[in-house]
Every structure is written in C-alpha cells, then in structure tokens.
Length: 498
Image (cartoon, rainbow, N blue to C red; front, side):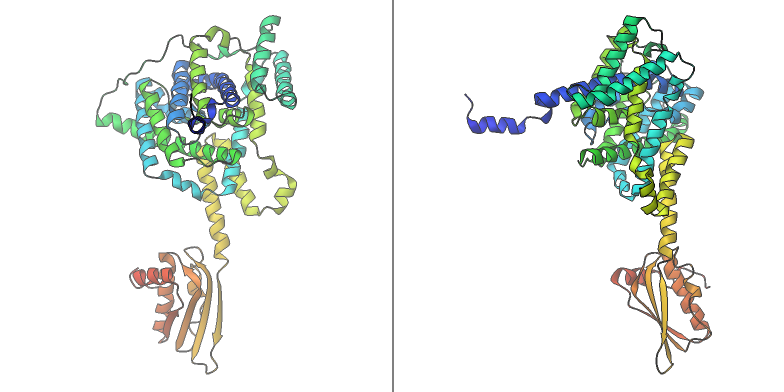
C-alpha cells in the first residue's frame, strides 16, 4: 500500500490531461478538429495542384509532430492555404517531388530561424496589427465558405441554419459535448436517413485508403535543385513562422497563458521536415481549427492536438466511406461560427472608433485590407507593421521642441532641445537655428533629448559646420551617457558638409 506522501507525489506529477474531465474535453475537441481538417486539407491540396492525399497526410503529420515539438499547447498545425499558395508554383512547374523537397528545406530554415531567436521579433508587432490580423483571419475564414453556399440546393441553407442554431443554443444547456460535434453528427444522420442530396465531404476529393509511407523526394542532389527550391523554401519558412507565432500569441491571450515562441519556431520546422519525409505539402498553425479546439471545445493540452492528427488518419483511412457522407453544410456552419467568434467586434464598435487614435485604426484597417486583398496573412502583417512604423515616426517627429534664450550680456545664445532625435525628427534640425543673427558663442543643450541614430549626429555636424563658417563657436552639452557615446563615436566621421 502506497504511503500518503507517495500518493500525493504521484498526483502532483500526473499530467493534467489524465484527469477524466480534461481527458474527455481533449478527446472530443480532437475529434471535432479532425472532422474540420478534412475538407480544408483537400481544398488546400487543390490550390497547390497536388493529390488530396498530399494535404491530408500533411495535416496528420503536422498535428502529431507539433503536439510533441511545439511551444504552444492546444494549437493546431496542419496543411494551410498560405503555404499552399507559396508552394503551388513549384508543384506546377517542377512536380510533386520538388514540392516535397521544398517543404523539407523550408522546415530546416524554420528550425534555424527558431534557434536564431526570430520569435523575439514578435515584440515589435503593435496591438493594432494584431487586431487587424485577427479580423482579417475572420473575414478570410468566412469568405472561404462562400463557394459552398453558391449554386447549391436550398436544403443546404436550411442545414447551415439548423447547424448554427445547434451551436448557439446547445452551450446554453450543456457543455459536456462540443456543440460543433453534435451539429456535425446530427446533420449527417439526418441527411443520410432522409436521403437528402447535398454536397458532401466525399465530393471534395478522393480520400486515401492506405497509410503514409516515409521516403525521400526523387530530385537530383545538385546546386541547380537548390537554386530552384531555396527561394520558395525561404518564403514558406517566413510565412509559416509568421502565421504560427501570431496564432500562438492570439491563443496566449485567450487562455491567459504564456507559450515558448522560440520552441514553437523550431518545432514548426521539425514538423515540416517530418511532413516532407512523409510526402506531405507542409503547413503551419491554423487559426480556424485552433479556435475550434481552444475556444469552441475548451481544449488546453497537447493531447487534443495529437488526437486531432490521429483521428484524422483514422477517419480518412479506416472510416473513409462514413466521413465522405458528412454534408459540407455542417462543416460550413462550424467555420461560420469560428469566423464570428474570431472577429474582434469591439475594435469596430462606434464607441471604440471614436476614442481610438486615428493612427491605430488606420493600421488595423490597412492590415485587414491588404490581407483580404492578397489572401496572404504575411503580406498583410508586414504592410501593417510598415504603416504603424511610418505613422509612429511622423508622430514622434513632431514631439521635438527647440527653445532659445540670449544671455543678458548678449554674447551667448542657448538652444534647449527636447524630444527624441532620430532620422524623422532630426531632418529639420539644421533649419531651426539663426546662424546669421546669433552671437559668436552658441550652446546647444541636449539634456532633454536623446540621440538615437547617425542621422541626428550628421545633423548636429551640419549645424556646427554652418556656425563655424560664420566664425561662431558651438558647444553641445547635457547629453546623457548613451547619446554622448553615440555622438563621440560618429561626430565628424560621417562625411560631407551641409
């Protein structure tokens, strides 16, 4: 018989997911996500121009591997549209083997970037860009469902409406079983029993009937092959990391937990390398399925991610005929609920727009507009960061003030500069002094300012040169330690006189 301390130690070391309540949540969440992954993986395979099995196997290997290597628990990684768009030209021009080789190399690049600490760049993402990212994702998830709602029988709309009603109403009665799972099962049983002819998962593409087999892509090991695949591999690595890290940050906010972004970065790389060796098309974090897992189903551990991959493989290989009967209307309803739940409605509320600085709203709208227009989250985020940087630079540039005072004897003019001096704010610095009218002794007091770059030092050099040409003496005083160090290192060494 175990002693009380031994029992206590055993309980303290037991993983969270072993508790019956958590285990049930994780298992059901993994099942719902697996069902939602199937049509998306097939559609992304079509975008990439490859067999549906390539996308389905990629979703299986990505989910299983990232559950072990990733830094963000409960986040779902699988084949995605962004990666499919990046890799489509490779498959179209050179074939599937080159695509697989690109996935493996892209995974290597991701692992290297992760070890180099690229995740630390996340701190430079403004909140307005993050809000724009989330809103754009919600819009893209919704618009991706529209093809399934056009040119279809009226019964599809009725099924979607019923599915939405179930997912809205059931959580008010019980949360023991995820509402999306109930909606999918109920609508499938109803359509099969009633013999209603509507588009199904089976209509999206042929499901595989065998397990994936590891192997190497059949490409020549030459520099020419590297020249072909390297640009696409780098693009895949950057796009995949950006989407994964931003999705991880979003899940952090939802769960009030901090995740290891560095581990997530190289974990994504390892997952893509493994996926490539199994002939998959690669992938990254999926915002829609992650929201189903975390927000709709309440999953919080790696088990749900692992089981999503396992269930996906079981569903498509062992239960393919059953899965093929699931009406697309059920999955469309699930994704519509995901898009509504993902969108940050507070960010577009009239009251929020009234009190929010216009620059913040502009950045958010720019991120949304570019992302939706290009269907590329990476481009949208980069544009959002650039717009935020430009607007910030313009705003800070106007915060520099220059006041002057003439001493009682009239022999010395003192200029007091306050604010942050960098390329945007120091460009006009040279024009703020009265070179012709000032006395022979000029003091520039920088005790209320900071020098941040070479542009400011060059501007100060230009000011000194202009005074020297008129026979005046200039003294720069009051610099803090960092400003003085930067000025001492660069002053007089930047070349050219203004």
